[in-house]
Image 1 (cartoon, rainbow, N blue to C red):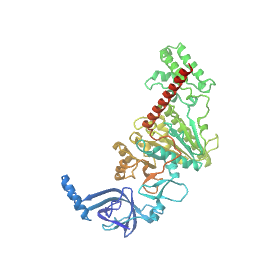
Image 2: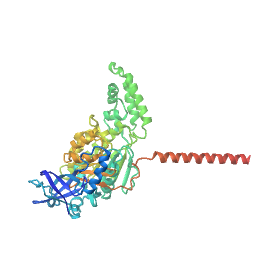
Image 3: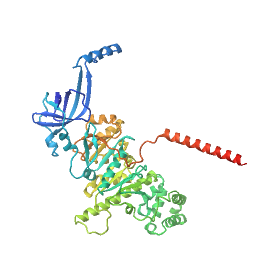
Length: 510
């Protein structure tokens, strides 16, 4: 069905059209050129009225309304359309941009279901449904799971727009396929995710497996306390790491420094006492978190399951150390497994994971900050660069894209971008996603909950979709303070009423 025509100056990648109705941003259209049908996406839409062009007051507006109703030609519907390529080539996975721009006067057509299904709803292995096209509910939207494991994924949005729902959906679908997912859950959002094959682990830290810098962070020794850190480095020997009584041996080594007769070590005595206090306090405060007898933390991760590592009980520094340790060990394990599989390495040690792993870091701006070096950031960047070769995919999730390191963000091969209002966030996204047009980024402010722009290698073409809700996700929605207060008030009234009845009963008994 003809819905408009190309007008004005056109380019191979961009045309302007006048249409018979207002076209929605995110709607797909067919440009019926002489070279063949071209698929385009409406990236900007505008409506103007000749009758209202020079209106200056209310009375003129009222009169113009009558004129506009009489004149069927009053409204002008303009659309800016991004060109993706020839439809038949796109349906075969090839993006061929026309060499000659569509000629002004070329018809704009409504695409059929068959035109779109092959592109956005492939039936090939590895593609899973996550929702439907935002402007066409009859067309399912699918994504390629292979691409997010091999090329990584960024999920970006302001709070409450559906990030954790999408994470839950991807986790659910990967677990169905007996794939391995690991979520670093910083705010305890996923421990109640009620899906099959889920493994929830309260993350702990084995201090034996850390280096002195990591142990210093875990014990929360200040970065500026250079002498305290030096003392810890001296005390944290291999004998301490191998000792059956870890904490006692560590304290003994600090005690040795305190009692040393060496003139230089005597200068450290005050700081050594402080380190001793820090170690004692850490054993008391972090007894549930620091466990030198827990063995290998990776042993708690189960292959072929959705693993939720609850790090919500850890401080920011402790969580950073824990995430860095897991990322380092996972990358090492996948490297060894991959190299051994190709016969380039004798199996000198056992590795835990035989198949690819997808790791998701929630609150990525905390662990992969833009203007700060952290151990978690170092290993996340290394996985972003190297992980694809060894079957280790990285997903980063953040409501503050502007605060995420751009080098890591730009390594993400695919993105789900939901509602974003801050201009700094939009600029960061534009820098990280070269394939996303400015017009499309400009529409991020108008998206509703669950709506998302999908770009990158996990989709055949950039698309606006509505992501389906995961019913099994219990936590994560905004809490209703009004309902909570009303319930609390009701319980108080019940308690008062019960107390009064008991008092009356006691008086009658007396």
